[in-house]
Image (cartoon, helix red, strand yellow):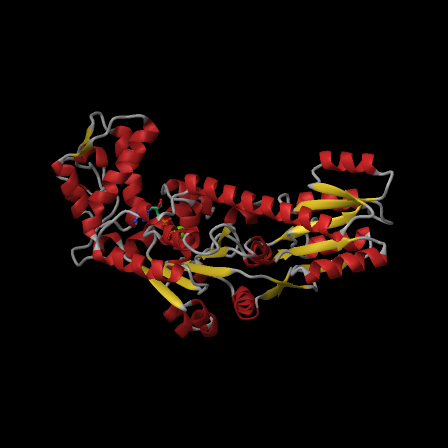
Length: 464
Ligand SMILES: Nc1ncnc2c1ncn2[C@@H]1O[C@H](COP(=O)(O)OP(=O)(O)OP(=O)(O)O)[C@@H](O)[C@H]1O
Ligand SMILES: [Mg+2]
């Protein structure tokens, strides 16, 4: 079954064609002129568009152009009257999939539609293969034999093929996105899109327009209509990262999509229906957020149909060396540098270190070591794992942190460091992030989780 748009201002022909295609099992919508067709194209998604070439208002070429600009992979089949074949040939050059000359037998149209659908399937398959090569979501690419990880993978394999919503909890850098990708790419939706949205990266309005799309003029700056991520993910999966960072309004909208499978674009009135599998991730403690009233309880239960906990690296130390070796091989290949392994001291250091940044931190440490290593075997020195008390080889001259004899929670140290950096950077988060060698996203995230108060207005703005 496919979704087909039939556009023709000739009522009898359009009706007849629509009926025949519906009888063949397709989901057909009709547009009685070019403008109506353009409107439908903006509002909905079709697998194939069948359009008359000559219509009042916008013609078949407009329909073709709009289809190609909104959905480049959707096939357009044009219908031409006798004598307009030349135009049809021109249209083929502009990207039409095929044309039929009126009058035609319905079978002829059905054959062309089948071919268009086949092409679409092949394209999806190709996209999928390309994706596979770029991103590694195979289970084999997920390194580690620890029981903690194997337990996670067993759940993931079991639920991948279902349509259940999955909620992935875990500290930063523990592989949440990797697991989400593995779920999608091992699901029945694998040939369709895997669309990712980071909920912490955008303010409420921008996030909603990212998710649901908007109509032209929906807000200042919305100078074009935009298709949202939910629509892009139709038939596939949508990965909502950092779901704990969503505003109450966005939470309500997501809940509705989960319950009713429908939504409206910002500034739009038409209801759009989608078939999307949701995979969500967070490193926040959602149950406490529910208790505190900052995360909707009903949404939490809807998301948490299946829950997966990615274990921190310090709880699966058995995986550290396997991961380190696999990263070392990868960076060795990328750098075209011979890297055979890790010295015993380097191995000990990796095992002793606490990995607050988990696998991402390990990956970064190995990348740095791969760059710095002067020999094929990486030394403890090459790893440069900061804290000198843990590094038997290297020692750092001076320390910027004072630890009181009574001890201090790491969080407090982080809060102090961040506040200092922010003050130095005149409260410009991006610059403060630079000072601490972290990404602006991590900075923003930490400001929120550590509860650092930003001044209402930046002093520089008051001055300016
Ligand atoms: N088991 C694993 N095997 C191989 N690589 C892994 C594994 N787990 C994570 N990685 C790699 O570690 C890095 C961090 O993983 P990922 O981005 O999935 O973590 P995350 O939990 O989403 O992090 P964040 O909370 O910061 O968004 C990625 O480069 C990923 O490929
Ligand atoms: Mg992530």
